[in-house]
Length: 205
Ligand code: URA
Image (tube, rainbow, N blue to C red):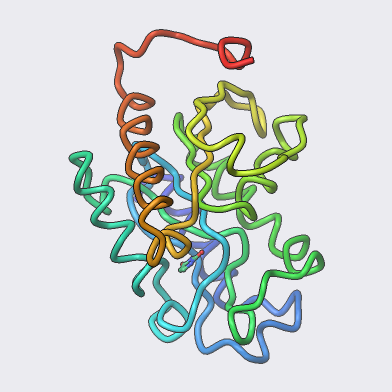
């Protein structure tokens, strides 16, 4: 095994044993994340839901099925990307993650990103977008204003293209959001293509 895979495995084990916040008391399984350790895209969701908690795998419920479809539509499979969440344990009743939970979990996502150094990172939903914005020295305002923009930024000591989009769960019952999500996935395709015109945040201002 190479060092990155080794380190990620160790980190996964640590996450599965984690007791840094009270969510360990109500979880069935912690959900560290899964996929390629040299991913074309690194996806960050919010938190595990019921099915993820039951299986220990990210995005396997209804929202996950939509994510898989959207990936397939742009010619990618789940094993070419990495999928994880801002927090690794399910909040009871799928409530929003609490500040303390996000802080307790912060080192895990930081370490996953620092080890893989993905060139393309996609935030699914506002929780992941806010989390990433903190490292981009900017404030996340709203998904309506910021979805679909390809940012170029240095985070955690490496350079990446970063895009925010709606959470697939929000698009499940909203055809307008699903349409936006599909268009954003077309941008994601552009984001990972080698011949993409180099742009900066200034292009969008
Ligand atoms: N929603 C998320 O944000 N993450 C999952 O893993 C599943 C649903």
